[in-house]
Image 1 (tube, rainbow, N blue to C red):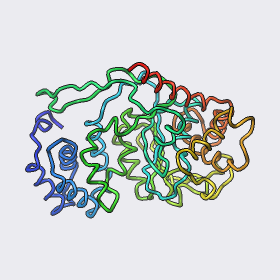
Image 2 (cartoon, one colour):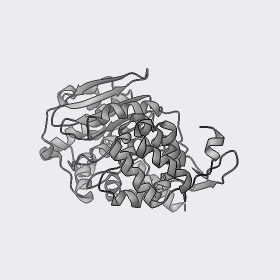
Image 3 (cartoon, helix red, strand yellow):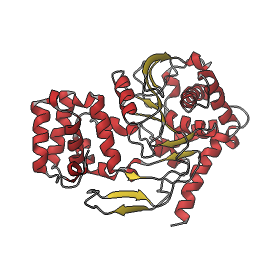
Image 4 (spheres, rainbow, N blue to C red):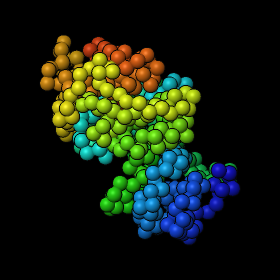
Length: 382
């Protein structure tokens, strides 16, 4: 969009015709309409609560929120309004593994654990996620990790050339294997729509945007979705957002992870921009299947205990207890797939093997410790 378009004053009055178009002519509601609409929603005093509620409801009822171009445009606007981090080693091939949530299975925190395991195996990981009974943030806090901004935020005033206030971190994020960027810290504009989302009786477009708005802008991703129709939609949205390599996955049980119970639908985006659909299975990783009932999660403390019994050499000892094998294998297939996306493993079996080595040699646990120490150092320096 041009500077002139960005400079246009946005008010509830200027939002009204956008809302009317969505309601009266949803098929004609396109990228530019979406761009302007989401800038309204994420800019203070640009909409009323009633308008936000009406807009999100109309998006949902018309199905416009299922279009990849609308989803990717909304993600672009969220990035625009986010706090911008500088990454030490930004030339690295950063990867992320995250699910949209909403699958209802309440499994163990496999994405977060798989991210740490992959980081221990050499992947550079920058994660941002919040899902399930015990979300990623809950698990990390239970493991003693302070979730603090590792750098102060500097606010840049609006200018005629850049009519929006910008927020950036004053220092680069440290070059450690694993990072976790807490959504409210990096997406303060979401507070404008948060209260409305909570009272609506359905999941809105913002519920599925999370995997697309990682402020670190990873180049490789595994994204779990809870409904198969989202697979090709998200693959296209990731492509539009500049991701180079990705796999969007949906377990046959409508699980937003690679399933340990059987087949997983997958949509692969490669460097050429081609998207292909295929099926993954635990046996492709050299692993058996396990019912999802064997990989259920608990609260944050319960999941932290499981995490340590698998990853912490001091807690685990030399072997992993038999009752944890299903969760271990669940972690291995997800971490293994991420290592394939990161180009560290040449195939699924090697990915699972490298993930297992990362756990057993203690490097996965070391990745968590480095993240925890970075948080503690940030607190001490304040």
